[in-house]
Image (cartoon, rainbow, N blue to C red):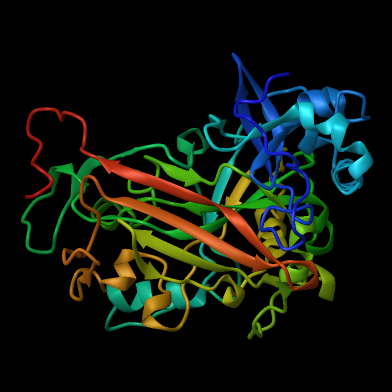
Length: 419
């Protein structure tokens, strides 16, 4: 097989501290000719799993263009393939058999590496929830009474999850400011970001069953950075009494490479103290209850506007799965759930423009001198993140990025985005 670009003399001879070294091995999907193949990133190259792993026990699942069948095989298969890869990539005597299956990442066309079976977005950052509460309920309690008793979430739209780099068309819908006598229709004028972490689920469960906090560990395959684009004006008008709908469902962006949970063992940290104590179904063993020492960086048109820390999130991803399934809802391989906006206690750690610009009252100044309260057409948002790996090395999660494009032509009666 001819690589997309010429390889260097020893593409697998990587330093131990490479952010995409053998300790990481994130999964993606690459275009090879007219086909899409599953791949693992190693350094600045992608190893084609459809060809390199053709003689392994997982060959059939890995021959498909998306991860869903491999996800269904469960944690024993995930661990087995990871061990096989690390053994092969760590043995110079085997590099010759692997190098024909390598493609330089630069110039590759990447595809969404899974069919998103179902999608749920949670609200797990106490700081974010408190900030939003203070903005929208200045005379009331910042947190709703249920927030510390259960992981709040909503059921989103899986078909509008797109791979990083996909342009985002400004959504159109109804909005009503406090000063408006009636709602108006048109492009959103409060288009926002949400810096989140997405979790990929493997191993389906039957309808009517439950997954405990301890069992949930075996359903967590990996993570990717996630931007849940949000039209705050559409959301504010529609969300009472049922919650987010058109203000969220137009698009959400997912990083192109899925970092396996096995690569983040050294990034696990204790959860914040949960007070009051959660109900028994949200309790688990110490090893099953964890946060992640992961720091994101949000750039708007190249300007760093925030560095949100994930480590302070209140709910463990395993608690989110336990809550998601406690009513008997089933899991499917390829399910995706997101953490909700990640925000830290400092002003420069907030994970949305709603918080950073405090609903437009404190506009941000970018490096070019322009200001932003919400996104304008042509703006590009890029979220990156790092986490500690084994032996003090750093893992770099694949970025998630998107550029805002103008709203599509609207039906008669619409108003412009500047109205």
